[in-house]
Length: 359
Ligand code: PMV
Picture (cartoon, rainbow, N blue to C red):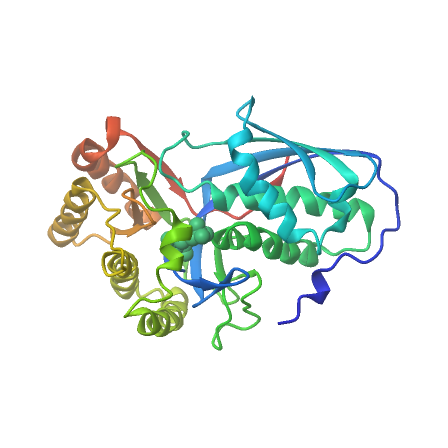
């Protein structure tokens, strides 16, 4: 695997101080990534919708100091010093040091906040890691003015991936593929790429209402979950199936066959959780209300010939997906019939977005 293009070479400028701010989105996978090998190489290709409203805003103040052997940084989350997040970020900096050696020459003050409520059960690692990656690339660009936009996005995704796999899909939008797949040109295990084919208009401005079923800390982290795929009896078939599903979904996204989309996306969500149920040790992240909601969605869809469907992340929350053309009636259904299954009736209305933005 050739990672040499991501190694920082030369700077044409000295930068003493720089302050940058990026807003980067969360994403929701349609074909799921579950299972990886070192260093953050996915066992199968995945694809996600980039979200619009669920995002992280991160500022980094870089101040040049004498070079140290490890990254020197302070971390603030929602205005408060957050030392318990530091080990994860320190590990990330260690991992990317060979590609961004300049980070050792700066003191970094990182300040971050999320648009979604704290501990809402929405994974913040994708938007969090991609935001830091974009901030680092802003510094890199100051140091080397010859970098193209395309390279900046590619390397940001490459770096974000080393922090959290799914973060590689949180730089661009509206649909991003991560993982090498023979049918998706230019796809790579090292970084995410924009879905390279024309998308049918039915998937434009697609809606995702996130039902906050359980806002507690997950009992099993995704790191542990990925690891349990190593000795998993169904893992090899799952990886084959996921790649086949991505190939099918690629066709569906182009031809607009929404019934096939619904079938594939829901099957992917349940398969992800089936992998958890059949791991050893086994675990369940869905809650009773997750199942109540799924059943209500199925009944509503049948009764109204609707195109509503769901997907799940590694948690109990339900992402309700639907075309923009059905927004009015489905939002009413969610408000009247699904909100009651959410903690404190809370849900977040989101839709497909276009990726990272400088602020
Ligand atoms: O990026 P990680 O290591 O948190 O893994 C995320 C895995 C899922 O969210 C369950 C699926 C995916 O493809 O995003």
